[in-house]
Amino acid sequence: MKDIKVRKDPTQEERLSEDQVLNSAGGFVYEIDHWNKFTRFLVLGTEGGTYYINEAKLNIENAENAIKCIKEDGKRAVDLIVDISLYGRSAKVEMTLFALAMAMSESFANKETRAYAKKYINDVVRTGTHLFMFVEFMKSLRGGGRIFREALSDWYNKKFPKNLEYLITKYQSRGKWTHYDVLNIAHPKPASKEHGQIYRYITKSIIPDKSDTIQAFEDAKRAQTEEDIIRLISDYKLVREHIPTKWLKSPAVWDALLKDMPLMAMLRNLGKLSNVGLVKPLSNAENLVTSALTDSARLGKSRIHPLQVLNAAITYGSGRGLKGKLTWDPSQKIIDALDDMFYMSFGNVEPTGKKIVLTLDVSGSMARHNISGMAINAREASAAMAMVTRRVERDSVIIGFTGGTIELDISPKDRLETVVKKISRLPFDRTDCAQPMIWAKKRQVNNADAFIVYTDNETYYGNVHPIQALKRYRIYSGLQSKLIAVGMTSTGFSIADPNDKGCLDIVGFDTASPQLISDFISGVI
Image (cartoon, one colour):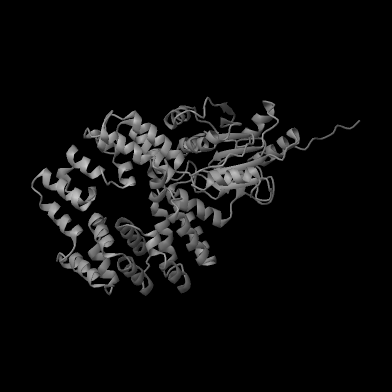
């Protein structure tokens, strides 16, 4: 009797099918299409690179991919940029500003695309700081020309004068750019008498006849007493950027600022508010801040991204800033409010009622770099994002995996700070994204409707490909279990087979992702 030869399955370091590509770690995975890669770039950015690919190379790859999208379909590229910007889906505004600059650059876009991009200058470039970044990007890309100058003119002329006064005094400069410099490029024809007076103020320091904001801003520069500053803040709604630095050590000044403080500014200044002694247990300021942070209507209008909330929660809870010497005693009430704010920032996520295995890639590659220059890495961020689903899905479980699996003691009631600490303490190891399905079969979990894998897709270590492990689990369970790969970095790879209707690749920390996951598992899409 002849021995029956059993065909050896390819390892992850061997190609499973012709449509697979080699990832940066040396494993074979699937390449996401250039539009999905563009979306990852816009949402997550590339700051810090990954464990296997440095930041400079990743930036080049994503820039080249963005150019490909712009040249293929400029209108679609601009629409995607605008959508991600307007709905607060991007972790960092630099990504959408850079992409819009590319779409308006004569080096990369045709005239029709540039003209179309110009229409949305005020939707994407919303503040003075945004404007200075945008101009710097345009100059670095060797962009310019008539359409660029018209876009800059529109930025100023299409704003109501009162709003423009506020913006030019709040955001006076960034890097080497000032409003004087931008006006010298644009040479706008004033849209009204009031606009003309504002331009004379920018270029010649002539204060307009009827401009409360500009006059109050100039008065603040000359204020001699704390009472004068507080009066100006209260009467003219001045914000922190309007106030000379010497007054920003005063609790009374911060108390005046807090009353009308924009939500994003509040998030950024939580440490300072505690440092000066304004936010403390049982104080009116503590109540005002917690109420503002958990105001769903206000949060929706702010375009604050969940990663910014998570970053604020981790930084504030630590009691010290990432840079500088500022320290404070955190308020537990504020920490709890930030926790609630994080989940609220994703909007309402409908539960599926399905049985879901949430799986976190806790390998070394996920902890190498922080996301978008924030105080959190991809490993910790994936745990926080998984909790959005964990909290609404009653029949769900969270496990971690590297070259093997780690059963995590994470409860839906755990605070973000607790979850992040549990993840950050785990040992590093190699990456095998097939482990979630292998674990389920080994543990005789025969009823998983879906596996959600939060990963950088740099898998290479396993003896079986993730898609093979999924298919074997489907045979074992008798279910058409689904696989959702949540990409936590801006690489072009995915473990999800694009030819398998039960697989989905999405962007990590896109505010739209949790509901998209729910819809896919439920069969809505």
